[in-house]
Image (cartoon, rainbow, N blue to C red; front, side, top):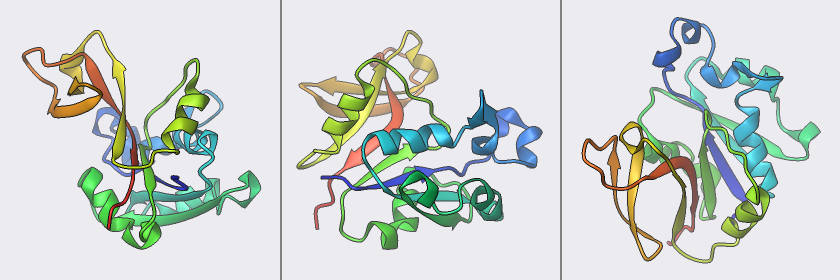
Length: 181
């Protein structure tokens, strides 16, 4: 059972510059709330209540003003800062004390998920008994995404923005992992 979640909310936000020089992109509003609330709600829909949000160095106070500790939402939120964005593996290094030896979900802080049966799919993912699950989504333009080559429900390879067609299954930025120690 997966009961812990990490939201990776760092990054440089270069495509949204110069606005992101002052504010982290996950704090920018999408409709009526900051973007960070969308991945947070995904973890909450999966019944994950113990959450670590990893933010850029120097931006911690901005986040804590918006989401202090999660108590009002019925969850527990902890924070960690990263020196500079280094990708997914760095999230697990930074989150080592938070994760301990427990299973964990990781979601990128700038992703937006919706769709029919989303809640039931999330509830199945947190029941994972072994291995890992990366949520994939079929796209029309795979050359713009990291895509996974899949055979018999197993990821064989991942290629970032392939020039030649490899697959039309994009990596969405939502992962569920069983820790094997």
